[in-house]
Image 1 (cartoon, rainbow, N blue to C red):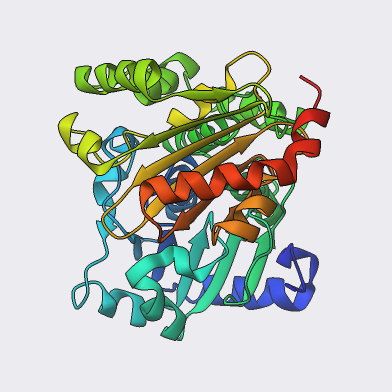
Image 2 (image 1 turned 30 degrees about the vertical axis):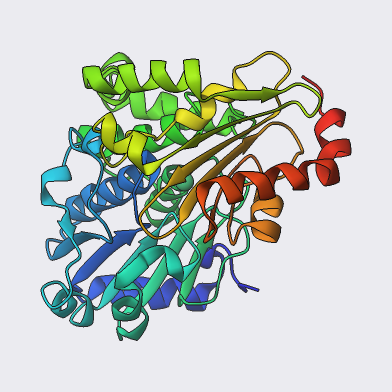
Length: 347
Ligand SMILES: [Mn+2]
């Protein structure tokens, strides 16, 4: 287990961090593959904060090509995509590496070895379950709504009156918004709304952020959504489960781009009486699975147990090396096992 989940609470660890910062370190900020609004928002938000403290040797490296829908974000144009041989020197030459919004090293994909072998001080800031021990310092809380919430808290641990620019606030607000499903999941605490209020005071315009994120779809994406809802969405009322299985051929036919299926899994949960939603997506080498649930039904446990995954209680991911159909079959045979939990959930 990770010993200090909030490293500023340990004077020795805090001074290790501040001593590193005081030496004008070369900084790399990285996050999980297929970054979402929280991975991107927390990393860019942290970058803007560090810049306002006078740090200018900062590189953001994404393990994979980021989705189009995040490219409007302030600072997004500076994000470098990892490429073997090209970005390795940045990682091995860094004094400080921040790993944001993941705590399983495998989520760095092909960039993993470069980060694990780097001599830099590694700081993990995250809210996923069961963090692995690959970092030096941990700012970790599974109860946090988002990594953006944690970055906001860390900023305030470091300074009583920190300078949060509008760009920084927009980035942090984005992760708060996306990871709470627009402030609707159980993770939406009073603290989340207090942070959102403070970010609004720094100049965030909620309608602008929302529009940039959600009302910015290519026409084909809406057509694809219509096709999936009409033809692929399955609801099993006896289990209160809903799922969709999307083939590689369908993704190709509708010109689906990286990130286009983001959020699709939430559609199923909007069905009356549904308490669990699953999206199977056929990729080149595996089937990727997204799980969503409500209340105390843990899809992270389910994903960990059966589909090589994990994540959060109500939002998790997994994968399968079986074919798309076999994966769905396997899932269906597991449903009787979790039926009691499914039927117990209040609406
Ligand atoms: Mn997150």
